Image 1 (cartoon, helix red, strand yellow):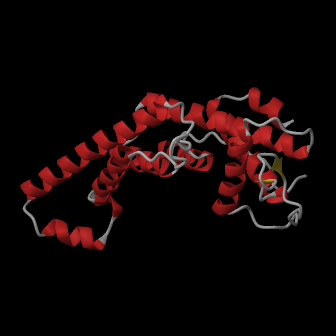
Image 2: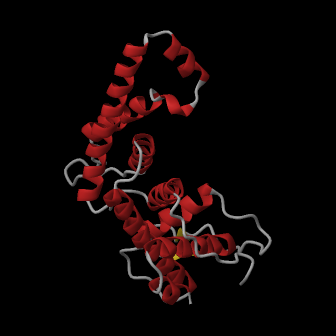
Image 3: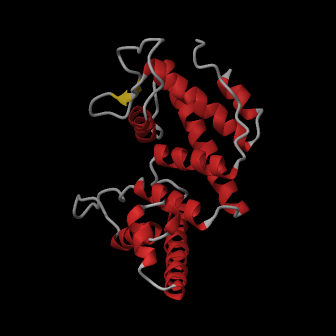
Length: 234
């Protein structure tokens, strides 16, 4: 049983166990959606072929977005509800992984910065205001996100030929100062964005964005003790 096995595993193996089974469910029954004008979670009415390709990022994002929008609604009994339970456990495991990686503090500046940028790219506006009926955007959050992106692009390890040529046009001391400034900007902006998302319990981050960042961070740190699931089995 997917859920029973998940609870018997540690943080990292649990995450990969649930991720593999989520992909398996979406591969067979996705994209998951909601019934029109409701938050009732549903499998695709047309099951996918057993020989279909692994689900794309778009398909995964679609199904997890529907799950996130449905999770606070009472669901009718059935297979779709069981899928939703697995997807919710994946989300819980994702938060555990993110918190562990961040608390351990082993990420380098670039991996940390790009991960936070990925999380912030999935940050949702606040619900509509009763007075304006419009989404409540956060200009300061967007400013920090833009500054973080600009600082990340100025780091040299991305291997851009243009960036490499630009680095030769300045003196060594000037280049060192530029890199120090960029790293400082990455740290400040990423920390401010991260503080906001963590204080809100990650509730305004789209599930797939968080899952993708957690997977990337664990892989980057080399701690991916993966529990393998044969996706070809029923």
